[in-house]
Image (tube, rainbow, N blue to C red; front, side, top):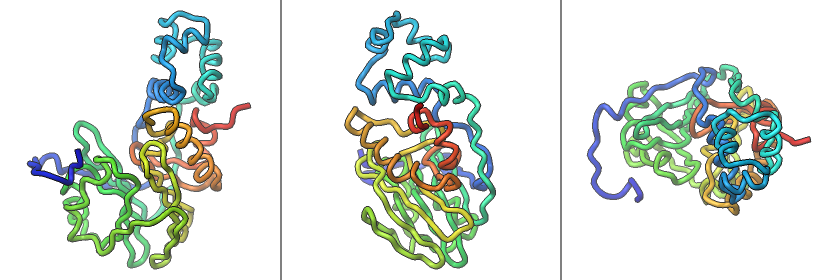
Length: 281
């Protein structure tokens, strides 16, 4: 159901959000079990089929998914699923290191029992907001409390936790940009280019931003630190990986990636530590 339609009762306590600096740490969105499950779905396999491919009992695959497998089975399963085995081994140590970048803030907004990110980029007289959170009014209440200037709004994809605040933000939005793949525009001192990140959602939009001291790429749910967004089938899974490799992992290593959930990361860190995207030997 589109949450922008029909009556909705708002609990004032649900509107609480927080603003964090870019460099502030945040927990990962996905633990290792999610990595295995997303890869299984993407390869159209279940635990029984993976066990058969690896010549083990299903209980061994259950242990693998829970992080208790031996090294040989981990290597074998990673090879079947086209994951980077060493990145899987290092997954529990992922702590993205992001510099403080003046003007870039993470809005942590409530989403049912969890949270979702929206990203605020300010430069001189320009204020850009990427996504709006789930609740109609949580982003508006948070931004009004900071005395925020009128916004240029961009949306990464049309899932309910990223678009629910569109109506509530109307009083603060001077323009809602609906860009096409390959389109570029200039807002003040910032250049914004839109590209295709479909897979987790179709369509989905990434935004590459130049004009700050480091390049910024807003990726929505296409990528998380150490993981990717879940895909419904093999077709969309391979589409997602293809778009990420073509449009994101090809960017300079110091490009900062602003994700839909969890901490920001960088292209260089994802090339080393993301089991889906790290280069296999």
